[in-house]
Length: 469
Image (cartoon, rainbow, N blue to C red; front, top):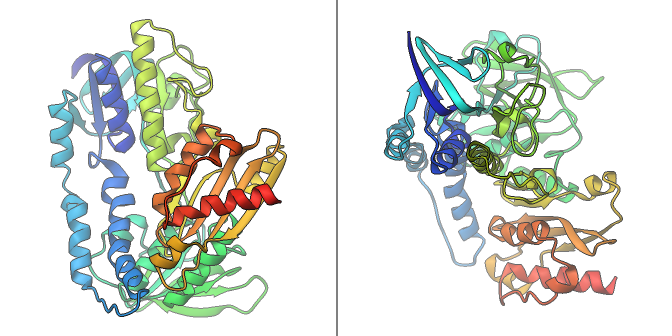
């Protein structure tokens, strides 16, 4: 048994853990990261990066075909090969080289807390002088469907790393993962059926986003079935038989070669030894805006990313990580911690300024509150809905089909939510994010002139509609 004393121990070396460690180390603190799988984590190898690689080529080709006189094709094997390259062949040596080159050692193994500021990794014990950070992410949830444990199923990891295109693919779940991967594999050649228990896809986005994504998937040939449950699963030779149907109806049998279960994720809080410091891990770790885990004595246990359940998106987890790393550095140095809203050491944006892109075709790019969320928060809300029909979109694609919704807090005259739906809208999102975070008055936004001819001209149309309404 060996013991080491360091300033900070980060449990989990995904994108979130890397950023915590980097910012803590920049503050002059000795820092180690502990990782039981691949350094770089879910996003690098099984989520954001490989999934977008699977989507991108077909998106570009389909977009090109929307212009007159263009013919374009793509090679599926080349798409999969590029995906492998973007995932670095599931080899994390470059990420390890970065960490160790930056002076942040990587320890391989499964970490467990063993009392205050003590972390065990196999036969090694690390004692943290200042902080332990839990950045262990999340994992897929498998619903309790009869027979589902008797057959092979794809998780999102399988769906983003597969090297053969299934002839028939069933997708269970109409959230971001289900919609993106249903479209990706349909465009790569699978026959896809998408089973959604609820009445619409993407229930967390504005309804116009749900409607246009459903139409886009159906246009591609995805069999989208809303209000449809999966009643049971059984093996059918080498295939999988699904008993599906709306509630109260006679079930229908659908046979698929692979079944992707995309019904949500849960924080990775099991087997971390949290009980040894008085934390019962029955869900996300509750943290304050500096990342401190609540319910324990002292200011030493932090958490960031999906494990907190606050805003389970890679970019938002990295933001939380930067906040946590800076807060640890400030507390360790005895410096004041800026906890005022939008201060240097608080993750204020988690509450009502979270940007997100659904990389389907059409894309759904949103930030802040939906109209429903704004009303539930007690805001005096005004909503402006428009099609994206400007000179820029006309040039972007023939018959461009897009929409935008702006949510305004009338009492303050500021934007609190905005959703773009359409081809190539993701790259427009940051302007909206700045407007929401900066609480820029609409009277001032009137003077932010959009360049012509770009899709961003829709900002002018939104403000004109708002002023005339």
